[in-house]
Image (cartoon, rainbow, N blue to C red; front, top):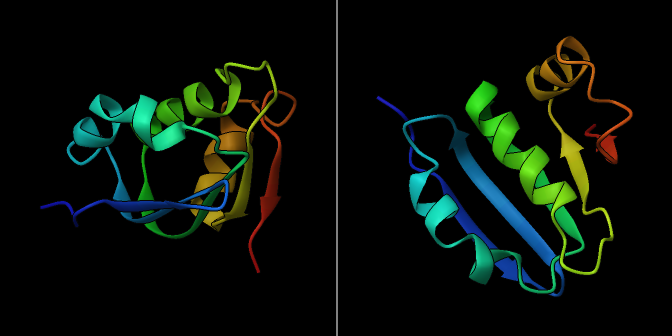
Length: 99
């Protein structure tokens, strides 16, 4: 069973926590317009797991800004970084690997 996905927006940062997997992301997808309003950074450092569906959502979120500005991923966890490399998305995404 997937851990619940929680998110909050504050000062241009969308912070995600929990598991960003196929079974947990539908509510965030449905509320994407509200969640992404004014967002410049998506903080993924508190995610415990990401699958390919979660990565697809992050790619969409980071490249579909209304003002054509790329939204950066902050705190990319090792498992997510592996997916980014596996799918050859390092040139598509702006991201910072977490500590």
